[in-house]
Length: 302
Image 1 (cartoon, helix red, strand yellow):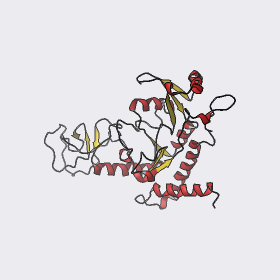
Image 2 (image 1 turned 90 degrees about the vertical axis):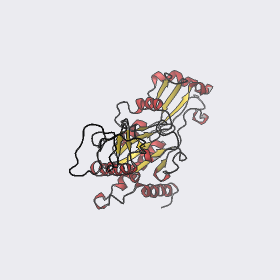
Image 3 (image 1 turned 30 degrees about the vertical axis):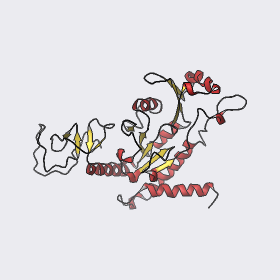
Image 4 (image 1 turned 135 degrees about the horizontal axis):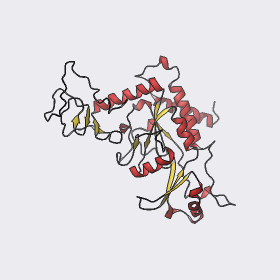
């Protein structure tokens, strides 16, 4: 559902007449659920000092009241569950899908990597618009991970990096905007802690994959914490003979493991779906249950 196409979700009187011109006097009967560029999408009046949440990263100038936000989150998630059988997946970038380092911070034993950029698809060198020349290294299995996750989830990026940096990474992992579209939250929209308040989906249907739990102080129940990806600066990644780095395995690396875990989550969330109540389903207890099951299996406990 596009908020641009259907902003007026707020219930309206049956005989209400719509004035196409913007009114300066606010309507006393309107709750101003959706405001765009200070104009209420429902009553078409100018709304000053609006206290709603901004969603500029999705649609320029859009703000929602708390009531509208809750309604929209539920509507989007339940539509996604019923029509597409998809949950929502929020992905961090740095140390989760990629590792970025300034070239000046490379150790002497790593400087050979700069000469391999042109011949490797998992490396990108950049400096235009940024203070220092840097390298981006894609995590092994990232392309297959995104492709398969896209079948089960609507995907978001949520990074503490800047907007321009995020767009640079997305050029590598999603150049055609197949996976994320405009669903990209950066430091510009979220300068403090990360929060699911900024994700247009019901928290009961959101899974987060991030290498840090501390940045999600209020949403830890939604978090699947992944092993931190450190390709640069890790001396343990050096082979003793060739002095060249080894990397995570595609088949047995953390992204592959995370994908298998997410497959379990998706399968069990939608299992026996026709008998479930939309108002009571919740992925968070399921995440905890599957995590404990995986831990018991790893420990050899039946």
